[in-house]
Length: 202
Image (cartoon, rainbow, N blue to C red; front, side, top):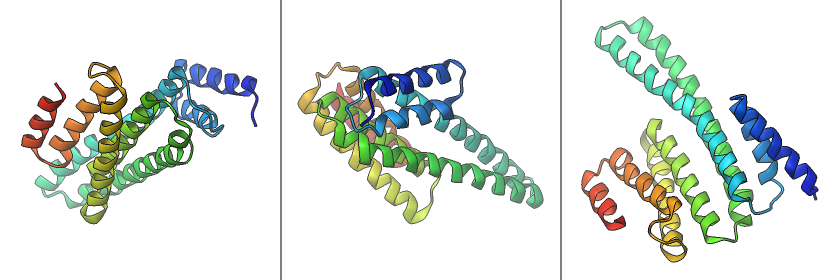
């Protein structure tokens, strides 16, 4: 069992890494806290979320740029460049998959089992929904369907917990409503359900 001093040290390193914009190390430090199997404080929860958001955000931006360039090269009939870009894009997709699977393991094995407060439960299921949504953004076929189904399941679990434990104006509940709406619009290609869900939340 790690001492509170060790926990404080991990959190300090995470804050330091954030200031230095070294987000991979920020994530590593907060994973160490998560693996202590204790309920995270609001500050610790936010540090973990910010770290992963920056790590995944950079790759998601890279993927969008590469996908756009690839489409332009294909439209010009430049197969050699398109093939080269495709290989590069697939490298980024592999990194995205690794990051998403990593946080999912931390959430399932440590964070959700250690969450006793309704707010924490909503936060981590929302986070799980988000990262499955990120997988669904670039996967194809059955893998896309599986990621989308897992994302919806996590968002639905978070929504049920939020409606039971959090007031409608709670920032986490509002963030969940927004992200679940984005899921319906972008992943499920269902503007009608997007509007219906969004209006229900308000």
